[in-house]
Length: 594
Image 1: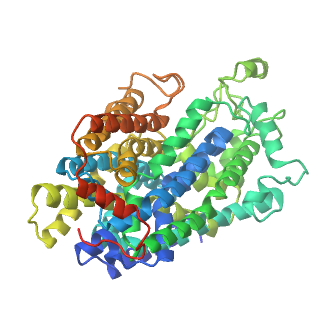
Image 2: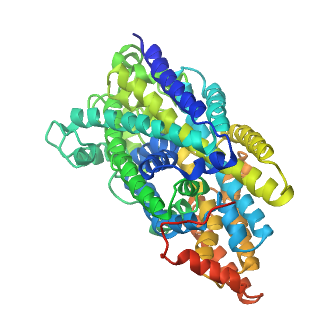
Image 3: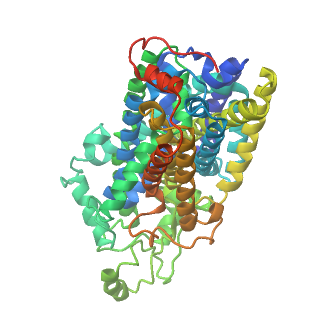
């Protein structure tokens, strides 16, 4: 059976499963659509939350960024994992005890203001739509490769699939679909990693193989360091970027994680507050299985790619064009070239493809002596690395098909969760909560589905020209959530001093200043070539656009406390409400209603 047929079988079977589950568990009421009837078991919810959390950025993009940058991009792991702990300890149980369906509803009630709820909806939409861009980007890449079509058509097909099961199933359908997707994605991520770790180090546990020795007795990381520095790249295990930017970036990811509406919504689906805590614990277990494996996947893939491009060692001859075109070992390059995400060019006409860092001044003398005329691996989209990894390592066809299904599961599961957060904000918080409070339940469900369809269209249009790799685009969304939503939630739970005016002023200040900083570096509304600065030369010293969320959050806190201090004090009944939510007594029960 050829590889294309295997891919179709794995992807088709997984999609049939997802859509079947969505139909079986379709939402019949707003309680089902928004919170799955609040009847999800903590273990089930933990698995669904892990799938919701581990998006295309985690599955497809993160290992690629680590592979091509090394230590500096380990901040993705630290920020995302630390942020989830922050969310589990400081926010999730209290928000569940408050008993609402959405983050915006909590902010509106806590700050006793329809304006606060409206501003929260705006913040949620901006962050969530930015996040969806990264997911649809991953969907396009995965479909493009495994259906052997252009990434544009892959994006169109993926959008239709998301629409099919997210729009009809709501939170109830998505919850059980995400359980299936977690099983698919974790198997798809770990099985190839085990194979590759055994090939390179003889150790079946990738996280341990990363620190083990290769078959020639040399430590894997030492060997990788030697190869990449020989080719003019930065040492893999050393830090090279600004420490200030790395700290701000990690902090931005952490507090952005704790402010993500689509993840917080998952804690509204369990029966009790204690179940929210257990859900958080189980989610950490399920997330750890992938996050402990990701550094090994990145390092081992980088080593394999470097050795494939220089099969005779860095002092020998590079891979020949003839080898790439005829050897089965290099067949993956032709299939990925068809997607437009991989490319090479024999610039000096010597029949070889030299892969090296042509921006390294120290390597210029060697390049000139050998007649090299620049790096000839002209295009290697880092987002393809995990999906191409089994092919690069020459693994069996069924493993490649499994990875196809896993990559799509990761992107689609998070896209569905984000679309639910967007539709809930529009139908429940904006329409029913603000504009048409007498809307019937049937009309509210229809509005939710229509708004979800509109969000898909917007995400597809923006996903055609994303502002970076999938994980980098997602990092921008985390920064927006960090600057706008997280401070409002923290102040809403832990401070009675912040009143409605302070909360609104803080959210607007944090959102606007962060959005402006991002647009200055990534282009206005992410339109290419409209930026004034770049992340290589940022406006504020070493602070890149992906790291600014932490500064935006500080602005939010400062503005909120200042405005609250010069305006009317929070009413006593709201102070009493805040105290009742924070008190652990009665943690088995939660307030119901919406």
